[in-house]
Length: 374
Ligand code: UDP
Image 1 (cartoon, protein in one colour):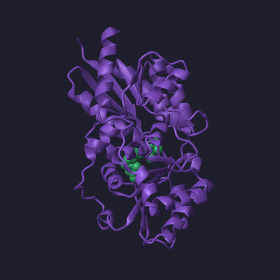
Image 2 (cartoon, protein in one colour):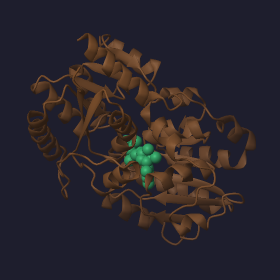
Image 3 (tube, helix red, strand yellow):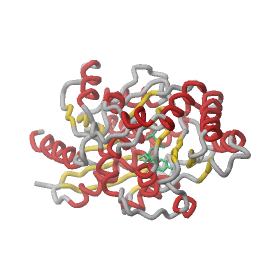
Image 4 (cartoon, helix red, strand yellow):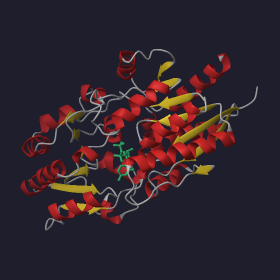
């Protein structure tokens, strides 16, 4: 039997974190030929992840440009991936999640009549405009996908509601495969600011915020709540690895002015640093998707700074709380978790709603079985 040619297409940091463990397994397995095409929808943040996992893409579309719109990204991904598919003729194209790379990479495969495998299929909020444009990206990708790799039972049920019942496999989430390969309890950070923080005698809160829906007023309210938390609790230290978006960076600098000894604005962390910081901190406040999946495995309470989540499993597991974007509510919930040991301990326990690190292996076997019977 000829090797099965798998073209993996991804372009942002979170996609890379979640696709690299799968690419590494494909590379090691004689049944497959692994080809990687990165769009570089993110540039530096993507490259850092590729380096950590030692993944060397055969194709790099290098599409990132200052100030480009979703439409620009969509055009470049569609035409770029089309060319790659025509040149390398894969048996299957793998895309991940819900970015513009995901949807347009899948569309390029569909127009070339190449089967699509959608990794992290079936996440839904039910509101097509939130998160924007991710909810539409994942829904539209699902409509043209051949093999759906759903992390959880509830993701599978979401697909059923859209009459997608064929070739749906529950695999867990590859984010856990990545996480377990990098977290180490004796880890020393690359960045000395982090090595100098006393994680035992302080309550260290890790903050991340970047979602498009939160730009502007919601972000201002989030920052105001965080500032008040730091001002009113002596033992609280905040670490905010700022996203590269200049709008967010400027807002953070002005909202957190004058409190630098308690609120540390730092550059985005490399994944291994970030994963180990999650495992050492006391509490996480975030609007990120991936972090809601990682934190339960580490037993860290997470406050989600959004009005909805497509990850209800983590909320059911008890480690994730939907805190919303209201200033008072965010402060009150965080303040309770800082000061009420019982409330904190209710949330701080390890749970595995996204699997135990075997998702990539399951996906590989499903692809092999499906190609065999095709
Ligand atoms: N992450 C990282 N460095 C950071 C912040 C986050 O490596 O400074 C990782 C994090 O562990 C998670 C992923 O990036 O795996 C989440 O990315 P992001 O929040 O950008 O996107 P989302 O998951 O919301 O799509």
